[in-house]
Length: 464
Image 1 (cartoon, rainbow, N blue to C red):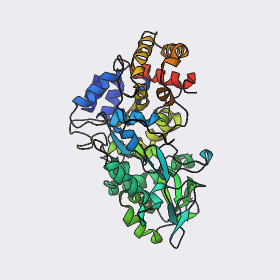
Image 2 (tube, rainbow, N blue to C red):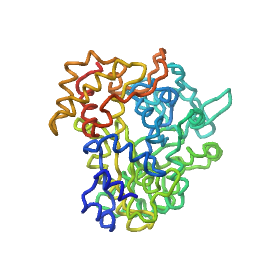
Image 3 (cartoon, rainbow, N blue to C red):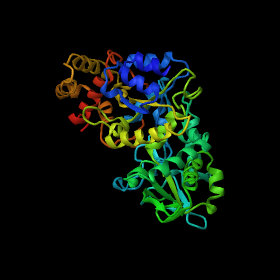
Image 4 (cartoon, rainbow, N blue to C red):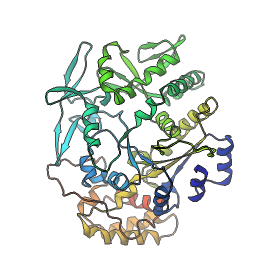
């Protein structure tokens, strides 16, 4: 099936497919935002293939207005998950938002609050202080898996509050990214042990460690970039000594367990190490692909597949909008790190099949207007026609020129999706529920053309 998918979409050269199939290449990334694959061809394939359902890696937080199609830039989640093109695979290692924008935290999904009817209600936040759970202010972001709040006066894990609300949304299938790793905990521990031991022997061990363990979190919820280095026969993580690679690998599963079983985690928090490792985006991405999150109800690799083709919907930071921004997925550092991880695992574990990760840029669905703004459909169809008529490589310029002449014909809501740093609106004036509308010609656009239009919206200042 994996080879059939890459062949049908013409994603790989014959040589690259053969190298993945024979194991001489263990990792290959493909960004559809740089390819001339029609959007409709990809969507048809997803709905045709049995059990295939690409994950959309959204964050823990407020999804109610997303499901109602009135979440501004987050409406691409509505188009993907609400219409069965993918499902929300929830990344939980986010941080609560702070009172000031420059202090960090997740200002997009707002996990430290509840957003209801367009209004944000900050939740009380508590974290461990060594003796009990102490109230915290919003001067600094807090690591969500280690935060408690209150629900009807009772202490409740913040994770539970959001997951309960999310899973009550009709028509959406929410899964935790952490669950796929905890379900394979023995394999993950063994893999991370080998990776850590191998990293310690590298010439640039610091960089190799950062590709595996990107942050450290203290039990009070403070999380930051970390220093990890060999220390005798063990490892030292921000001042705390772990006796072996295996011990450190087991500790790295604890933040995942805080997401999948927060009650149990908090019961034993007084017995945990004071500093816990946080697994990197890169390693999590490789492992969840290998464990088949693109087949949530089926095997990761059917018996006749020589390699895994992992389809994954990535949002604005991950996918960017080529040619203006490539996103972190295709950065040299990310590709180098994921390739190094895959090569090491493929050489040591039978579970680690060669991996082709196909990034599907979710921001292309920002081009689909809300049904509550019907006047946007025809102008957007005209924009698509102008872009499709441009010479190859000139689509971005064509879209930018069109926006310069016709911006006033588009709604503020549509253009507002592209504002830098924007997230779920909470200005107190909720919009009516809506569904995304695909303008004429949307599915005929290639992902490269559609990404160029998204880039033009960003560059044109069409939202200013």
